[in-house]
Length: 290
Ligand SMILES: C[S@@+](CC[C@H](N)C(=O)[O-])C[C@H]1O[C@@H](n2cnc3c(N)ncnc32)[C@H](O)[C@@H]1O
Image (cartoon, rainbow, N blue to C red; front, side, top):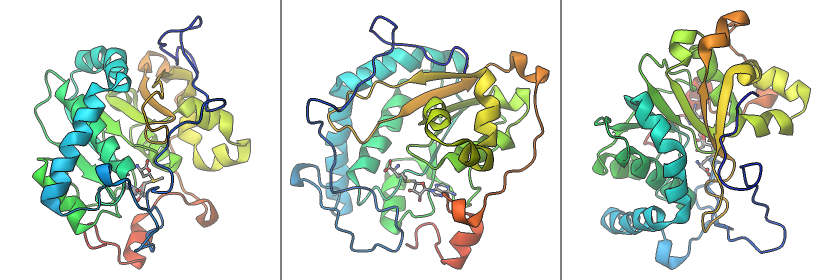
C-alpha cells in the first residue's frame, strides 16, 4: 500500500501502541451485543457511564461522553490528523454503518460521539449524519433522531453510491461491508469521493490468510495500490473503542492502469460477516424492531 501512513510523532512517524506492559483500560465485559439473539446479554456498564438509561437520562449522559471525548488527547490528535484533509475535500455527506446498539453499549456511544464531534469540525458540512445498522432498536433510532441525525431504513449491505464527497464511518464493521462499498464505487470518479474510516486495510491485508482475502476482500486487495491510509493513534482511555481505526482515501490518478474487473462480490455462507438483506428478512430483523 503506497503512501498509506501519514504519521504522528515517533522517528518513523507512526507510533504503534501496544498493550504489553501497562494494563490497558478497556470497556471489558460490556462488549457490543453483535449476537442479535442476545437480549439480556451480560453487558453491564460502569454506573457513571451507563448507557442503560431512559432516553432523557441517556441524552444527558451522552453529553458527558461527548465532553469527555472532546477533552481527550485522542480527539485532539485525530482532529489535527484528519480535519485538514476532510475540510479540503469538502465532505458533503456522512454515512455511518454498524454502530451497534448504542442504547446498550458504551463502545457505540463513544463511536457515535466521535463522528458527531468530527462533523462539528467540518466547515462546509451542514447536513445530517445518516446511520444504518440492522440491529438498531426503537430506542436507538429515537435517540439518533433526537440527536438530529437521519436513520436509513434500507439494508444496502454497504453498497452505497458515493456520488458526492462522502465520509463513510464504519466503526469495527465487517470487512465485507467495506469490500462491498469499494465494489459499488469501483470507478475513479466515484472512488475519489470515498473517505472511509474503518478497520485498517493494511491490518486486514496483513492479518488474514490469502484464501480469506481472496474470498472476502478482493476490492480491499485491489485498492491497495492507490489507497492512502491514515492510522489513528489508539491512545483513548478505553483501548477497545477506537482500536485499529484508519481513514482511507484513494488516489485514483493511477486507477486506469489496472482497474481490474468489477464483479459484484458474493460471499460463502460460512464466511458471512455482515447481515445481508436476506438474513435480515429471514430473522425478521427490521431496523428499529429489535
Ligand atoms: C463488530 S460489530 C461493531 C459494533 C460496534 N461498532 C463496535 O465497535 O463494537 C459490527 C456491526 O456491523 C453491523 N452490521 C452487520 N451487517 C450490517 C449491514 N448490512 N449494514 C450495516 N451494519 C451492519 C452489525 O449489526 C454490528 O453492529
